[in-house]
Image (cartoon, rainbow, N blue to C red):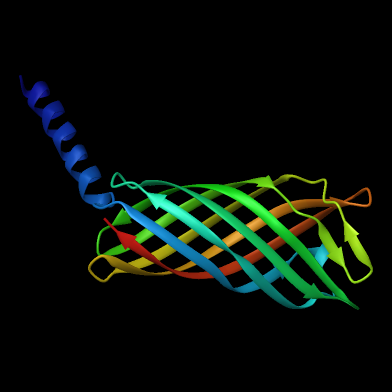
Amino acid sequence: MFKKFLILGVTALSMLATSAIAADASRARFMIPVQVTLSGEDFDGYESPSPSGYNLQYVHSSGFGVGYTSTSITATSGGEVTFKDTTFVDLSYTIGSEMTAQFVLGSVIGQGPVTFTGGEYENTGKSGTAFGINGGYDFGGFEALIGYRSESVTAAWGGDDNNVSRSLVMAGIGITF
C-alpha cells in the first residue's frame, strides 16, 4: 500500500514540477542579430563583421517551440565577403512565465551564395548546427528578449570546405497569448 502512495505522490509531484517549470502561455517571438563574432582558422584576417537576418519562433504553452532563422554575415579581408542567407530550423524549450529562459537547438536547411568583391560563388555546403539561449521578460502581453546564438556551418565553394563559425548576440520582442 505504501508503494502505491509513494508512486502516486512522486508522479503527482513530477507533474506539478513540470507544470510549474514550463512556460504558461503561448508566445510568438521575433529576434534580429545585433552583434557577431567570427571564430575558427577560416576567418583569420577578416575584420568588421556585420550581421543581418531574423529569427521567428512560436512557443507553445507547454514550453516546446519551433523556429526559423536566416542569417547573413558580411566581413572584410582585402575586400568584402558576404555569406548570404544561411537558414536553420530551430527546436526549443522555454521555462518560466514572467522571466523566461529558452534553450534552442538548430540545424541548417539551406545556404545561399558566398559573395566576394570579385564575384559570387554558389555555396554547395548544406550542413551545420546552432545552439542558443535566450532570456525574456514579459511586460503583460509583450516581451523584451535578449539572447546568444552560436552557429557552426560548413560552407563549400570552389571545391573547398570552409568552417564558417560565428557567435551572435540577438535582441527582439515577443507577444504572449
